[in-house]
Amino acid sequence: MEKLHWYAMYVRMHHEKKTAEKLGMMGVEHYLPVQEVVRQWSDRKKKLQVVVIPMMIFVRTGEKGRIRLMQEVPAITGTLIDRCTHRPAVIRDEEMERFRFMLDFSEEAVSFINEPLQKGERVRVIKGPLTGLEGELIVVDGKTQVTVQIDQLGYAKVEIPVGYIEKANQ
Image: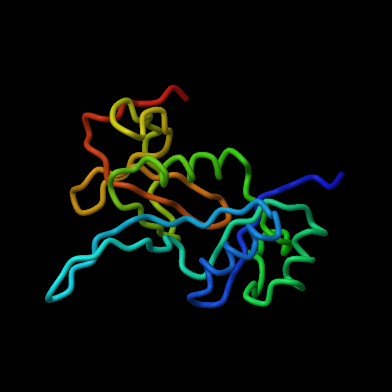
């Protein structure tokens, strides 16, 4: 049996949800990071499901399965490549679990940044819906944020009150 890994796969613009639907119908384990946001128009407000990382979906499959998906799903345009090995980037299971936990339980909007951050202190969330999440503490524009790194992709970050975190044991 082929060993399964998480891969970040590129999809055509605005095809993320349709691709997730197709992968679901094919029985392929996948994760499309979406979050509910309220958008304000001049005459109304509306809740929308917004894709966190445009043009990307995460798929858990083996190497042969990844190649098969690229051939069988026209909306998939490629795979994130590891800059060092020049091979498809494998995302560790622990990174995906932390990222999914952050998205599933955060009351604040999660954003994604891919530029390197200053190395900060390791922290653990001790209160609120993200209790147990470990990440790195950063301060952006005077606001405390916790980041979770996905090595090949960058950092997911969420704003969190200082009283909700404590220093993590190294």
